[in-house]
Picture 1 (cartoon, rainbow, N blue to C red):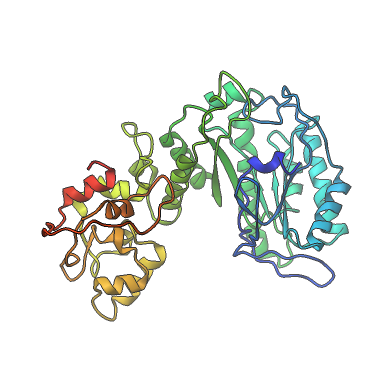
Picture 2 (picture 1 turned 45 degrees about the horizontal axis):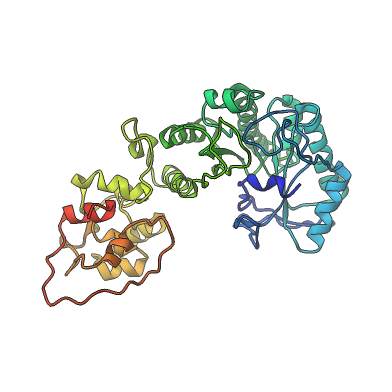
Length: 424
């Protein structure tokens, strides 16, 4: 069941703080509890498992689809609860990530999930973190009961368009997926009001909800995926949208061939763009449009945006507002806040920026300090070019440079644009 659950990538820090209670076992830490790695290289902290791999749906991208010839097994709620508690007591895990195939019907499956969580919470007094998948199509009352037992819930959209769902997951519809997502969002807002009025009101999904999108199984563009992501954050107030590079697991004319490599770098670019949406004040339409529907895999989205808006650079680091500092490559949320704090006491120079934590090897091309660019700024080697690019592969930070008897000219804006985009 754990092997079948490995394609769910939403295994992250809990997002909820809950200390241990007398008479119960387990706790939840908001900062994250990762301490192990799965077979596919992802850092995990939870027992990520399916209640069953039996499924009545025939989603072509799923290994557990009804038409696939695979061994079918299932836990009883009691078996799953005992397994979780035994693993916790052995210090193998610190929480549970529970999903399931759809057995018999969405309502029946949800009832089995509820029984398992009730055993954990009420019989075994498990106070640790639990993330559970809501089953699209289940009754609202059952989803509500499930949400009162879990810390976080998620409803996987999987595919970014109704057309893709109709083609690859004919048993699912956009409405059946978004309805429980809307219900969870409304219940979270309602619960926040109840907690203000009533001190001991039960908490409903205190760590919020998330979803997952598969990348590369369909022709949908990055622009389509990112626009949908932005809409989900705004309408349903999701904590996270996770992206999963499609892993070819079966031969199907509607899907990429099994020889196709998973688009892991594309997944990485989407995560970077997601970060820009959530923390840097960017909008999806600023990063991609109909004319440029996919990310440049050689340059990260923030740097790519900066290169397309060179008319607003360089920025004076001692005067630029916070919103513009966040748009400079090499300056993150923490370093931007430190810049605002430090420049109250005096003007900053490039050495001061480095001490603050700014990545100067990228930011130096887009900022000035006291009206001046970094002294002796040059591009002299392939190593410098590579250090400025978001490389497709991990590369060593140091590259040998050939000595030159000639004075290299100072870098020009056109040189920076060419080196960052690979146009030597």
